[in-house]
Structure formats: structure tokens, C-alpha cells
Length: 280
Image 1 (cartoon, rainbow, N blue to C red):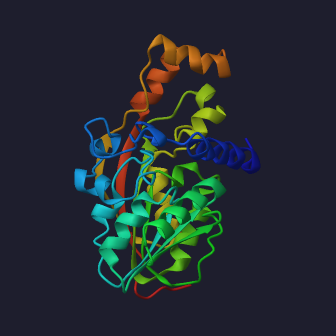
Image 2 (image 1 turned 180 degrees about the vertical axis):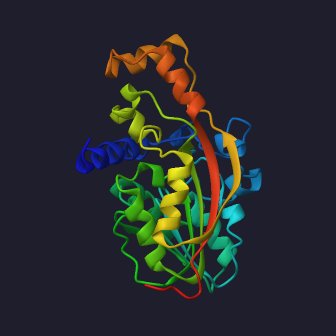
């Protein structure tokens, strides 16, 4: 699968969440959204009820795999960059941490996500938040201008992960930090799923082996790369309906393939630092 094909598949999938006006637990027009109920998947991955109630309706689409904001130790006055900011959930939470003297920049490649995030920021008065459309492999951000970078289940979707981490390293200040929640693999996926566009856009087929993911962060120049947490992640069941849906895309996919994928994927929380003195 080439880069253009992968990006188009990802963009189409995530634009769909906005075009269909849906969130993690139902149509936003019905007033459901992600309002902190027990059905809210965000409560299962590290967010508190007060977090999901603190953001505008329509910002939390339930697409994350952790809570990077909680682990980033954000301070008032800092500049924060959210890679793959979506509809703005983590960016809006971060804005409260950095305060009026701080700033949050969200970058996302999907126009529909950017449009929703900007609309919510304007409507609810988030003056210290801005959203920029762009690829995280080519960030529309100046060198060494960011104190902290956060990202939630997005870097696994990039076609060139090594380049994405190099870009993150470029824009963060010396002494700045990276805090990502993401999906990685403990063992290889079945070959048939590695070539499945839907599985790629769903954050599965593009996931790296855990050691390779950490190595890419190191290779970009970050130091003190540390896994702060690791947990299983529910990527869906292997009921007959799930198998049938997968086989509509590719008849070669089996129930055993889906089970193997579920056993291979884990969610990790990773922290890293940019050294104060960078040697090129």
C-alpha cells in the first residue's frame, strides 16, 4: 500500500465521524455525545468524568487509546502541540492546563475535523487554542517552539512514522517532552490484515512492533524514552457479525485472523525528552 492510498483511507474514515455527525456513543444531534456516562469509552482509557464533561459537545469522538494530557505534566504558560488533534478533545483539555498565558496548537490532516474543532473553539471561547490543517510528517510549526507534544492514537496511522518522530523532535524545544498514547504490537499481525485498508485506518494494520516504535523515537533524537503504562485494548470482538463484515472487504480474512489481531495489539503510554544540548 502506497502513502497516498493510506492517507486517503485514513482521511475518509475520520471525515466520516464528522460527516455522519456521530460521536463515540451516538448521534450528537440526539444529545448523546460523550457526556461522561458509563457508556463513554473514554472512561475506560484513563479519562475522568470531569474531563469528558469539561469539553464542548462534539469534541470527544471516543477515538483515543489513552489520556496523554493526564501524563504530560502540563504547566501554566506552556505551548502544547497536539498531533492528530481531531475534533479537539485533548487540545481543549490541555488549554485548561496551560491557562490564558499558554497556547495549544492542534494539527490534523482531515479538513472536516479541523472545521469542527475551529467551530467549537470559537463558539466556546477557547482563545488560547488554534487548529492547523497539515500532515504530522510535515508539521506546519516552526523549529523549537513547543514545550510539550501530546498525541492520542494517531502516530500509528502515519505512513512514515520515523519522519513523524523527526518532525516532533524538530519543533519541540530543547528540554521539551513528548507524551503519546498509541497502539503497538506484541507480535506480528496476520499477513491478510497487514494489507487491509480498513484495518489500517482503524489503527491496527499500521501499528509497529513495540520495540520498533520505541527505536523510532530514539532514532529521532529523543532521550529517556520510557513506557509509563501498557494495557490490553479492545479492538472489537470476533462474533460472526464482525467476521462477516471483515469478509465483505476481503473473503480471505478469518475469525482466527481477527482473534490473532486482538491478542497482538496493546495500548502504551510513552514519555520522552529532547536533550537540552542537541548535537547534530
